[in-house]
Amino acid sequence: MDQFIDFKIIKSLALETGFQDCAAVNAKEFDISFLLEWINKGYNAEMQYLLNNLDKRKNPSLLLDNGKSIISFIVSYNTQEFADMKLNNGSESNNNLKFAAYSHFEDYHKVIKQALYKIIACIQEDYPDFKAIAFVDSSPFSEKMIAKEAGLGFIGKNSLLINKKYGSQILLGEIITNYSTDYNTEFIEDLCKDCSLCIEACPNKAINNDKTLNANLCSSYQNMINKGEIEESIRLDGYIYGCDICLKACPFNNKPKVLNSKILGLNTSMQELIIGINNNYIDKSLFNKAKKKGAIENIKFQKLLSNIEKAKQEITRK
Image (cartoon, rainbow, N blue to C red):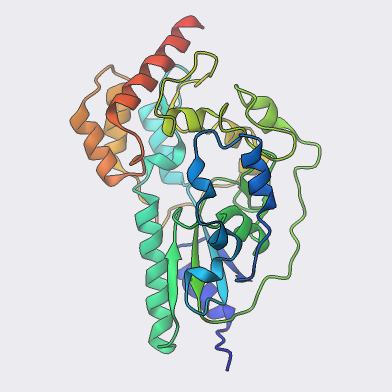
């Protein structure tokens, strides 16, 4: 007998927990030809790990015994608290060095996953045989593809998921469960249409016209993942970790801010690190403190120093 849960129960718990929205899809086989084509073109740079677990990328139900449904959740980091912080510390000044917006918060991998397991625990109180596993940036499948299939948005020209209400300043999480539920049947129209602001804004022309990104040219890849020296031709435009340029160019991100977030809290250690860097005080203990609590776990101190030096050289040459 197929086990079923009314999706209204899941959504009510999601909103109560602090997610902005959620939706579900059948854990079927998905077309991953777009990923393979992207890799064949070399756009993945050195990210060869994307070729791992192709069976699970294609069929996420393999990740859980008798997996039936994937529920996709979104949480916005476009918060008033973050806006106030930027205003107070001047971190958006043109000559200041910058971190991508999401990295100013506590480690989203941990806090979103905690929120997802809180939802799972609540469901299991009434449905004891509800089995589920949660993912945040840790699944073999494409989070954006699942969210799109679930009707939470469309893929923008910068290859990011764009939600009509919250734009692309969002983070994703998923639950795979052995229960069936109500699945999305809504088709979300591609609303980019003739807009090409993100393509034009990218300083390195990393965004292609077919909604793909060339990681070799993307400053986020270069200043976060590339372990070697960044080529001189790559512009950072002040970003020493990640990049928000294409997000800032997108009209869908001109949205009212979320007043506060029950899930995402600011990482105060990051603020100390950023203020220190922009006052020429670069302390490894501050870096380690910020890294321990935040979402910058994939960068080493020497890499950050190298990024700072390159970004400062660019500013000097202006």
